[in-house]
Amino acid sequence: MAKFKDLSPAEQSQYRDNMRHSAAHVLAEAVLTLFPDAQLTIGPPIEDGFYYDFSVENPFTPDDLEDRKTDATVDQIEYRLCRERSDAG
Image (cartoon, rainbow, N blue to C red):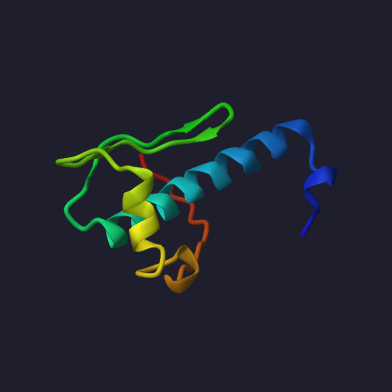
């Protein structure tokens, strides 16, 4: 596997987009694990990273996250990221 620095600019851009897309999914899964009543709304990769908006009764606060640090962490959730191609027509 080629190192990131050895990829062409177009390949680096595609790699970043793929990683941001995957990271958004990991974020969504982690939030849903911590806040099961949360509803996913939108979470696209963007130019400088990614984000996810969630529909919740009360907005998240730093205290919410601090209280739940011991409940679950992303490394406690087993992930297998794989790339699949589809020839949707």
